[in-house]
Length: 423
Image 1 (cartoon, rainbow, N blue to C red):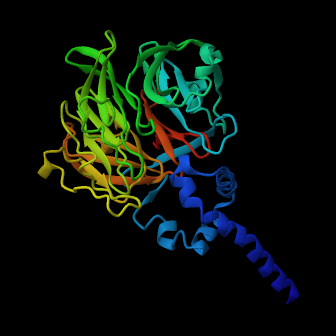
Image 2: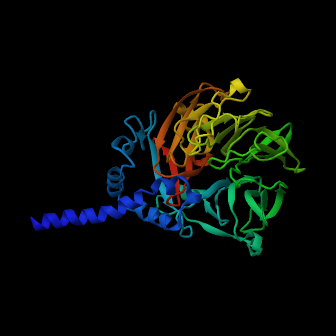
Image 3: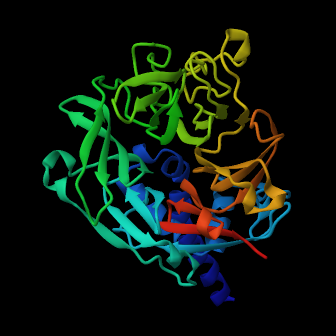
């Protein structure tokens, strides 16, 4: 009997610190830039514990109930989806030790390129994706101009390969002025970055967004770039200002480097995908109201006047809900509650006959990908969406045509996720 009581007391003693850790998990998981160092370390330790301990602690702490835990009855868990069975594997990447591994991915010829937010670059042969091992074989690329003090603390927002050049979007700091900059390097083992476009305007709110996509606009090759104008209950005042680049999607001519505001009224567009003349973008709402938008030239998407989200804490801060009543473009789809929406891709029809006219949207807080089916190849009307649970924050997503598979940048464990349909 004494032994039984000793076990119970020991379990209670073990659970108390775990519950205290969990009490901070929402802040740590959802607001990484505000997390305190001690809690980020605790979060990492907690996430490395066995699933049954994490699940039990979350339930006891009141942070989750059984419905949350099992992700509700109709969500499919891999390898099953509604129409296909999907093989899902993870390959660990040997990044430097950190509490969160934010990285971006793109493809050039037979190589996969990876760039961390902190400015380290790697490459891996695409054939390694097909090898059944636990780790992704990578080679670190040398960055010559990181000897420049201004480039030692890069904060990268995205990476894009065009031709034989690798472009990055980043925050450039000059004293108290934070500006948006795009840099490029020829793809070699030694990356020598040069400035492609440095915008003159200083940000009044932190630099975010920064997604890039190649786009042909009026016969001119260029880059579409997303910029932000928000930070929680600071909605910003630049998204509706035609003289500001912030809160916009901007077109930059590859040859002349001249810029044009392509669309405005954006809060924080975290995803951008182009297929011929069709542009889709994903955008963080405030509290609730993440959006999927079809982007048209010279259209206004409403921020900070209209949003289907709410303020975080400021009860006096409200947003109009209807977009079209105020001459703004309505989203194609709104996610309520928010999923921490991230990058998206057009999924080629060759992936499978059952998944035609689909896009895949990744998420951070949602820890899932969302398969969104459109009525037709015009991508003008959403038919339905299917949540596919992955279990990690997904920062980036790409389709690999050569092997007909999908790869994911998994942020919590610093791994590459590989999705391939089962025969």
